[in-house]
Length: 206
Image 1 (cartoon, rainbow, N blue to C red):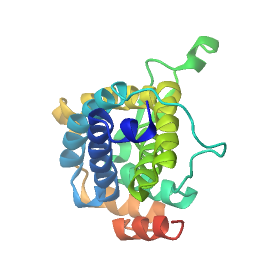
Image 2 (cartoon, rainbow, N blue to C red):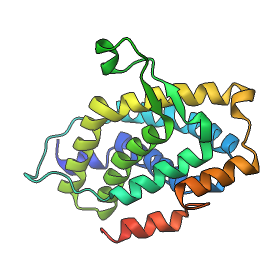
Image 3 (cartoon, rainbow, N blue to C red):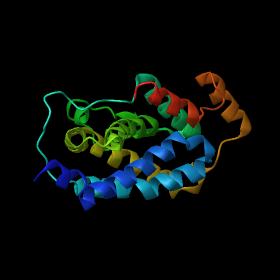
């Protein structure tokens, strides 16, 4: 199948649509309360997972790897923003992790890092897709699909399980007090990360 038939196929276009919405949620996360943010995540993540499983196979057309746009700084902004919203609820015990086979102790993960890892792959793909050069779009799709299978798909499942627990446990989901939020703002060095800062960081690398 030619690259244009792949990258403009129904399943890919739908994946891009959901992916863009996911990235927007993460970039504008500070606009939401903890309750609102968690609620949006538990609705959007299953759809993102479903659309990723439906992506078509493709064959690389370029020798060079797909271009990456998300910098370490942008990744950190996303992770820190989500961590500040979730506060003490960010940590969770992983029920499935490769390292658990070699350890008797539980593995602790962070929802914020899981969501940022997913964001990194999705944002890189959608940025390449938006440029409109079909061979690059094809290769970015291939990279994103491979990374879903090997990496961020499991991150999504793990993080969704933790978010599900927050969403349907009212005591866990209660928003933090003003003093808790202020303390978190001091820890990160900012009381609020602006989505415009993330957009500018990404534009610097376009």
